[in-house]
Image 1 (tube, rainbow, N blue to C red):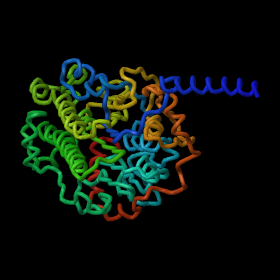
Image 2 (cartoon, one colour):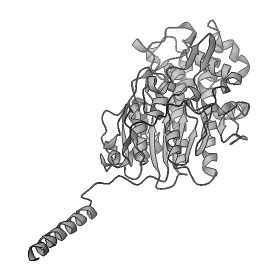
Image 3 (cartoon, rainbow, N blue to C red):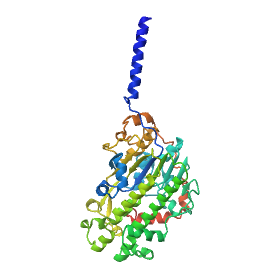
Image 4 (cartoon, rainbow, N blue to C red):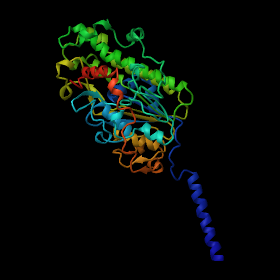
Length: 444
């Protein structure tokens, strides 16, 4: 008995020491799920532009988020096609697995169809979260139309076309009274971004390859600024309306495309030394458009983040970077010579919130790592078939984040996206989507 008592006494000492070590932080634990994890996509973001603006004090909100958290370059993927990349971001899978491989899908003699959620062959983060009982909201995410039924709300990426678009939101009729800003609001906003004698009646004339220079500029303003700002303003308004509804969702995904649009259109005026035929007047009128747009987005980012609960977390990212359309990135098709910005291989990532390691150094992160990281951050298991990894270097708990979240073989159930595959047949926005893709040079 004395030997047993001695052994038990030693065991008790070990237990007490272990408890003390745990209490002192001897074992890292994953952070609690944030009140809201907001994933914000800023298409085409590049540190090459953003860093100088931060140093000059022109993007204080993004600077503040990065200062209290973690920032890094984010590797992109090929093909550098935004709906493909953003679907990889949302699914954690390669294009061959998630089913979105280009802007369009053709076959069987049918006319081209812009890709939509019914063509996706794998669940997105919002489907995974919904299955797990998480309250989720999706606003404007690329390839989120037709809206899928879930435990939350979707304002799809075609919602800005109006109530005539079937499947624009879930629940059906959600934010039915919300409209994009009209011509008056556009005219009122424009001087902040550029100087132009813009005339909507001359848009059609500017589409022609032999258009007069003034008509071509007029079309550029419409195609690369008016469309961009109108769409982003709509989805930002939708985000604020969502927060007006009551308790914020546990997972929120918001996407803004206009940052990429203005970079495609106005780069030559910002860096005229790379291009021929840019006049001093054009530099004066449009040279600050890209910077002005990013500064506007930064202000809107600050307004939105201020409305989130104080213990929320943020993950900001871009799908690729950007630069001048020169050299190997030059645009040679005459129909698209009004475009002067092109994609680059490296985008941005910024994380902040409870459990994020301040000032951390993250290396080698790519767009394929986002879905696993979001799942682990939310305490949800990561699919072992996902092609990326949890970016554990940005968390104070390190590998414990992925370890405690656990894993599953796959989140796929063999199903396609829950969006209605017939919705596109009578979609009044279809032709406008195709026209917009032609103006970008993505399709003929």
